[in-house]
Image 1 (spheres, one colour):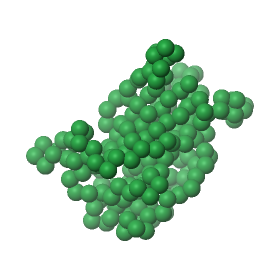
Image 2 (image 1 turned 90 degrees about the vertical axis):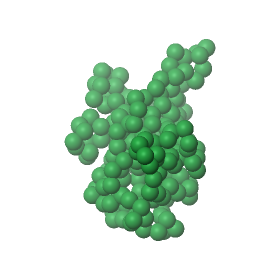
Image 3 (image 1 turned 120 degrees about the vertical axis):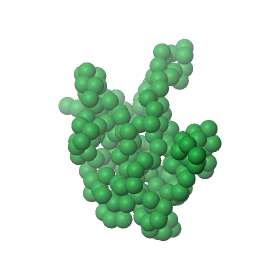
Image 4 (image 1 turned 30 degrees about the horizontal axis):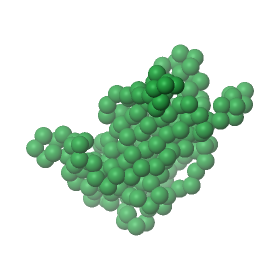
Amino acid sequence: MLRKIVNMFKMNRHCVGQIRVAQYPICPKTGAVLLHRPENVFVKKNLVLYGGADVLARLAAGDAEYKINAMYFEFENGSPGSVSIPTFTRAGGIAYYRALLNPKDYLRVPMSINASILSSDTTLYDGNQATFFSLTSGTTGALGRTFNAAVGSTVYGVGLAATPTIGQPTQDIVFARAYFDGTLFPKVSGKAVGTEWGIKFS
């Protein structure tokens, strides 16, 4: 039944998103991320997965545990020239991430700031667009592989996820994914990779 509802809703026409990825300098004195100084900005539309419909159904039913509150930064260790960008469909959810093989992994990080609600057209909507933002954080991926400059960690894709049980990553539902089409973001000392992700409903 849920899949029939998904088809009727035409998820990727009525629910669209766009990512804005950049590297942000980190102040050497304070450790603060300088969000006003983005570098190497990359912009692209995302693909909302079937899991996105699962998340929306649970939220509509009043289950706030399924709010979108984490971002995945998919990375690969080694030479940046060897990074392979995957092809994927709307069915590629959490099982894809949990099956990543060495030297691939992903960071599972909370949002850096609370999501904001805006209107894409004030004559039609009171607030139909949610914007999320998160930064790379930590030195170990969700599968236990190292994330740092010394091993050549390179971020090449992102995911947006609901995490109903914080301590159980396998229970996450991936809302959307996007890749950078050959634009790579290597882990650089003194910088963090950040993604601003807008989801618009119409």
